[in-house]
Figure 1: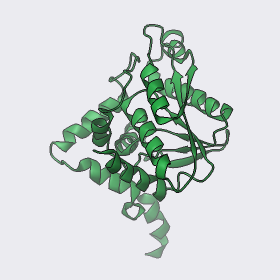
Figure 2 (figure 1 turned 90 degrees about the horizontal axis):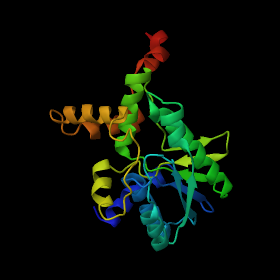
Figure 3 (figure 1 turned 135 degrees about the vertical axis):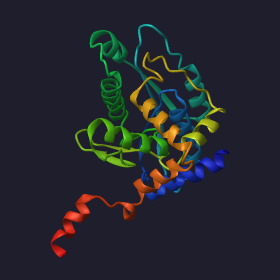
Length: 247
């Protein structure tokens, strides 16, 4: 995948869901992983020719794991090359989640605390939007996680308004497949995760399920993605309830 090819999908998502407007200042959440670093790179490239004039600032929430030190200097170097402001917010989230609370399901609490820290930095920096590196596969995985663990048919939106703090959350890579992100990220500096729960999460469990299904249905992810984003393919009980008195 070339930058130009990736940008075509990025632009499609941004345009379809009206994610960026003139005058926006966008905080890009950069964990250092392949998804967030790819998003940073693509938004910086998109900014060069975008019809909307906007500003970017990259924000890393350092979780502060006591057992390991994360070196974000490669991200700092990339930001200098891209001419993007870079801010590292140091926290003790890792210690709280794994040592104080000793969570059996650490991802949920960690996610909430990390998002809270990111949103706080975004507001402090005068940003009106926050961009996250979720892609098409994340959309599908989240749907299955919600179904399996919450009994709900629900997934995240490409664009949502956080009313309590006055920020708009956008996911510009919503049209990009994880496999394409993986290949493209090989050209970028990636910081390995220090999280003790890395690769053993519920999300990884869902990914394994889909991979097993793909052995029989190779295009299963494409079918699920299409079902989610096209409302005319939605056909559940609430539609029948609206029609029940008509026959």
